[in-house]
Image (tube, rainbow, N blue to C red; front, side, top):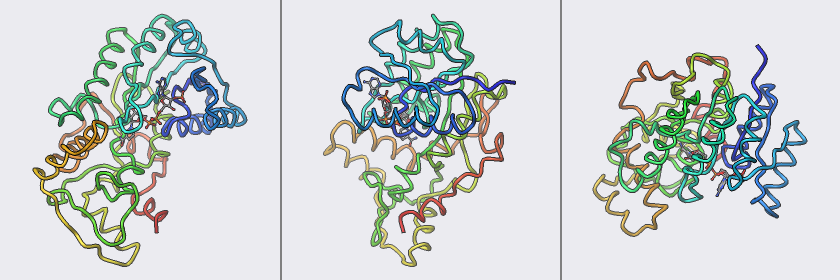
Length: 312
Ligand code: NDP
């Protein structure tokens, strides 16, 4: 079977750039949306040009121009969107409703992967406010996709390593400390950590896989299902030093929200749900989902231990 042609939207983003490279690496003819709004943002333009030099096609289009979106999606079989969805950076999830309309009108797309790549929003009805806004928005997009009859795969990638492992799972930190660490609650709730390049590899593997059509792909690398204390312990072994540990109760953690701006409150809500509630590991994957490391055992995923070496 010929490999699908892929359009990546949000291709210059934190995750998007990895998706572009993984798609090219896997031999897919790869198209990257080049938004006119990028203007003279030289970093983005240079990145787009670097994709072109790797063999990608740049497709000029804009979310403000419906026909340009329709023309773009007509070029491909699969659309992957990695538009922004982290409030401390930017949050554009609802723009995807334009994309859904364009995909429906174009009528040729065999699979759409919307910008998800985190906690499964379908399981987050009780998420902490205001962090729940992300899940609500992602569910609105899912509803539009399913009502339009567009074939889909949702990717639940759990915790990006760069955000969570880098900071030893401490809210507001992305570099590991060498002296002390704040432990959330008892520090024993398990979460799941996935390196961003691996998320991209699993995502590209799944686009032509009939087993994940109209399903959720959960990425749960077995060695990376760890508690905060286990992550900290791995780091302590690497630097040969035990960190001082201060624990913060759930109540104190939530109370600290009041001094934060909105974007940080959203983030804190997510950390609460992951580290105090164990929202990533408190369910079994049912018949509506598949697990990535089982489907694609040939992907040699990066373990948390290996990942942390970069910070030593
Ligand atoms: P980024 O913040 O890096 O943004 C991605 C792209 O979104 C940008 O490069 C840009 O695309 C596009 N974009 C931003 N604003 C607009 C706009 N106004 N109009 C059109 N396009 C816009 O995104 P991330 O990589 O951080 O996030 C991608 C996904 O991953 C999200 O769904 C997010 O929720 C999820 N995520 C999950 C995490 C986890 O730990 N599980 C952590 C971080 C993110 P262009 O290239 O066209 O300029």
